[in-house]
Image (cartoon, rainbow, N blue to C red; front, side):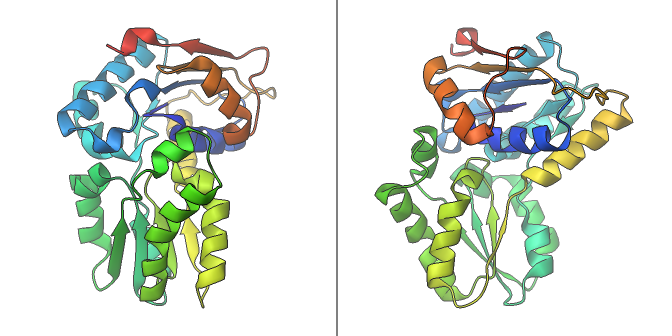
Length: 268
């Protein structure tokens, strides 16, 4: 599994809850976060390099736990590594449209995700007759990378995005970046304080975990052990900062059978 930073831990958390025995390799490319402001070619090159690294470490299935990387590079990765199963992130517009009663849906994502063909395809296929409101939440990824899940600046960023959507009548909110589930408690407080109707907040991580389990089982790779599987994690950033955030974001500390390493060889 990989992400531009700590956002992919929201997907790893869902995977660990669903299939705790499965050994996992995870890389956070924090030296290059955020991907959302990078060019398509940059994100593709970074994603391919990380995929090669993880495959060299023994990975057999790759979860692209990053909406921006999925939008920019998933098609290329599947063509470059045709024998490798990939699970990517797709903005959960379809379930939002299926459940909306007001006909107005909000989507929070990075600029690269909104500009990608994957998002455009999902909207074209599933959002006919529904109003889609979008916001890129500038600065939110950096706040989450720093561990600022609460506080005035994080609230300001979210209120700038959400209050106009609430005023327009959204009743579903799609989180189109894997970083954003970590601020769901704050999002829900803002929604409940300002919306006259319930707003369904859609985190795609559980669906990605189910697809991961399905592909592992289909290929005969699903772990059947009773004990939690080992996690091996790398970051291209500062390992101490990353390890400090792990218990808060992942919900578990590194066990004795798991490890965290620096991935300096990827930063060039």
